[in-house]
Length: 59
Image (cartoon, rainbow, N blue to C red; front, side, top):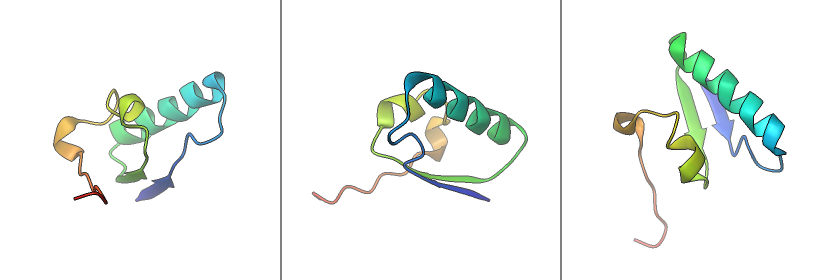
């Protein structure tokens, strides 16, 4: 199980691409990933929809 809390925070564009590539490879290899992020747009592209869970503090 890989736990990532805001893994893209403070990274430049090149570093973001590298981190996303690592996450993709780990997912393809079957690793379990728990990901916490406020950046839905980026992770929406790599995480399957059936794996998304939202917690909204406003509800």
